Image (cartoon, rainbow, N blue to C red; front, side, top):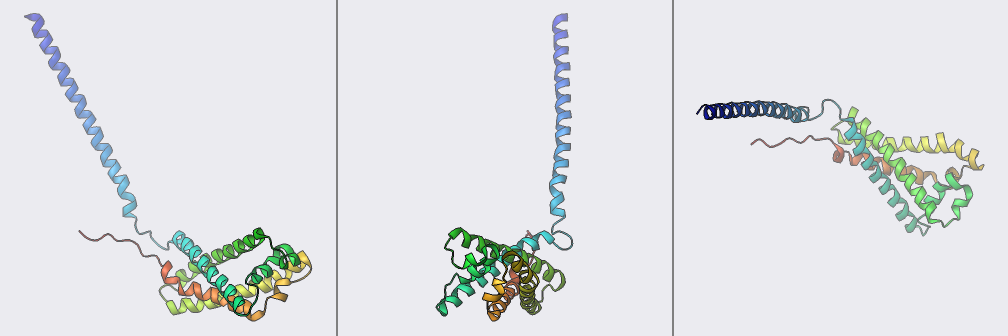
Length: 215
């Protein structure tokens, strides 16, 4: 009888100890769940981002810049076909920056790919700069953005042709092939079309934060 009573007491104490430990674990789990819920709620509380969403406008500007370069590219190709000219002549002319006079006669596909990649890369970078500046200083003003786009295109033409290529290419190959072979009106119109495309597409790149519907 004494041994049975001792065993029963030991079992009850062991059961009490297990229940106590389970309670402690449940309390610890509850605390961890509370901390986890607070951690997950932090990003939602900071949405939308405060101030100017710089990263978004850079990425959106890159995409818009690529579209602007594509429109400029198509303008060159279609214009050349309309006047029965080599549709890739403008790539050859721009390619003289890399190969000099050899670019005018080469048929190397890698060469044309290189020039096209540079063309779209410059357009993407310029598009990002324009998109950030316009949405920082003249947001929600479509007409002003289109006018700024045309002006921006003209500014790019002046800088690219007369502040960079006019001194860089003669030092590399002895001639300003781009300035000599590219008609001024074609260069101006191409850059203006690029800038206008940037301005017209600005509404597509406007940041509109997602707001969940009220339940």
